[in-house]
Image 1 (cartoon, rainbow, N blue to C red):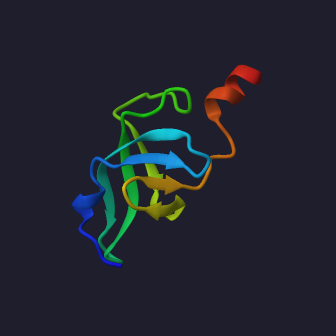
Image 2: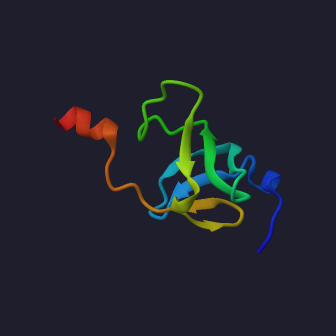
Image 3: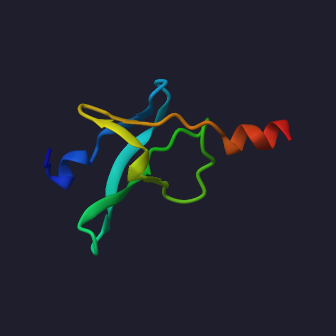
Amino acid sequence: MNAEITSLFGLEVYTQKGIYIGRVDDAVLDPENGVVSGLAIGDVNRDIFEKKGRGIIVPYRWVAAVGDIILIRHLANNAKSERKDG
């Protein structure tokens, strides 16, 4: 399936377990291979990530499905919770 890259902009991103990650602000392109290599996520869920900038980059290989929302593979480890526990 081919789609416009701009159709990804503004979509909400969730893990497969339904945890909100953020909203797609931009796409990271791999010009050598002509593919999307990542998604720039803004409006990041601060319960999952400590935001130290404008957002995060999610590797596109983590994307499990794209539709009205984007589903990514569930994040097994959470750096923020590890810091609290450790």
